[in-house]
Image 1 (cartoon, protein in one colour):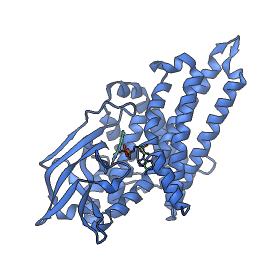
Image 2 (image 1 turned 180 degrees about the vertical axis):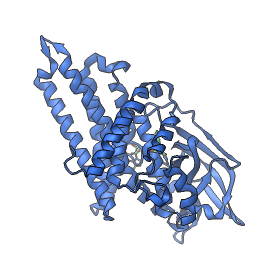
Image 3 (image 1 turned 90 degrees about the vertical axis):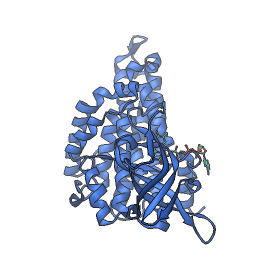
Image 4 (image 1 turned 120 degrees about the vertical axis):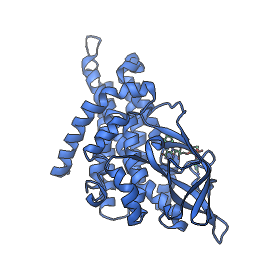
Amino acid sequence: MDFELSKEQTMLQEMVRGFAEKEIKPYAREVDETGKMKYETFEKLGKLGLLGIPFPEKYGGAGGDTISYCIAVEEIGKACGGTGLSYAANTSLGASPIYYFGTEEQKQKWLVPMAKGETMGAFGLTEPNAGSDAGGTRTKAVLDGDEWVINGEKCWITNAEYSRQVIVTAVTGKRDDGRNIISAIIVPTDSPGITISSNYEKMGVRGSNTCQIVLDHVRVPRENLLGDEKKGFNQFLYTLDGGRISIAALSVGIAQAAYEKALQYAKERKQFGRSISNFQAIQFKLADMAMEIDLARNEVYKAAWLKDQGKPFGKESAFAKLFASEMGFRVCNQAIQIHGGSGYMREYDVERYLRDIKLMEIGEGTSEIQRLVIARHLGC
Ligand SMILES: Cc1cc2nc3c(=O)[nH]c(=O)nc-3n(C[C@H](O)[C@H](O)[C@H](O)COP(=O)(O)OP(=O)(O)OC[C@H]3O[C@@H](n4cnc5c(N)ncnc54)[C@H](O)[C@@H]3O)c2cc1C
């Protein structure tokens, strides 16, 4: 439903939809089977100006708003969940922290090439022993003269193999209360001592690049510190608040794809002498699917709008992410049910949608963590 989209937003939606239908959807099954990301797509997205939608033109971006960015995530995710994840992570996690917290010099050096699509970006927060509990980060960065020396390991980091730099979170000291200070540091991926590999066999979003990063005495210049050394924790909480809106938009895109397939199949499939769409049991499923997708999309737009207005949006981004991801799982599951045995077969795509959407309940804060975030906003 486009009831409040501006002319520019509607035009962008049509443009991205057309591109995704032609350039992304046709290979969605292939990247799922091979587990390999198609980098050429990102070069094309860069040329179209779609990798820098929410950044000002002076940083190589399109000067668009968050709603426009969410529209693009939804359309790309609808065509291919894995490509959608890489697209969202690139902008929300790889590029945005540099835009939010970087110095002018850092923006020129690292953000501009990303916004123009000359390289991708990644954000390495998760570690084998620090997932939901990011405070448990063990990667350490120690100043040695004018360089940070970084040791540690990051896991499941999206896009790292295709990025010129990864923003890495690391412990850089201790607070007065004994807790660790966590900072964010921009680490060039060609630094000596860094090893990036992608040997994970994933359940879904297989068209996205997911990496392990090992940092063994990696040295980077002191000026690669991103933002305030002591506020790294708050910085990534803010980054994740923004990222969650894009994961919600991606969930809406995948759910929309599943719903459209299910509606079409329900009209075509005949049992007991009539299309199964004549059965009220199937109609009710489709009615719930259409309604829930619309509600989730509205919450995505609301959270994005609040962010664009400079108003608090942390609660709404958690609402959007939690509702859209769980809604998306329900919708994809029902899309398989409507397809019956065919839905269990790869050639009908709906089983891929279910595998892809599951990640949305886990990445950028699990559903349980979203509920904790919401409860905190409620004053619990
Ligand atoms: C494909 C993929 C891509 C990813 N991309 C990135 C990336 O680009 N960058 C990055 O930094 N990370 C990335 N991640 C990591 C992702 O963000 C984490 O998997 C996620 O935050 C959860 O952490 P965990 O897997 O360690 O689970 P855990 O934290 O170990 O959680 C396990 C379970 O315990 C629950 N739980 C934990 N703590 C609590 C609590 N306090 N209360 C209630 N329940 C709790 C969780 O909700 C979950 O159900 C990616 C992961 C995947 C699978």
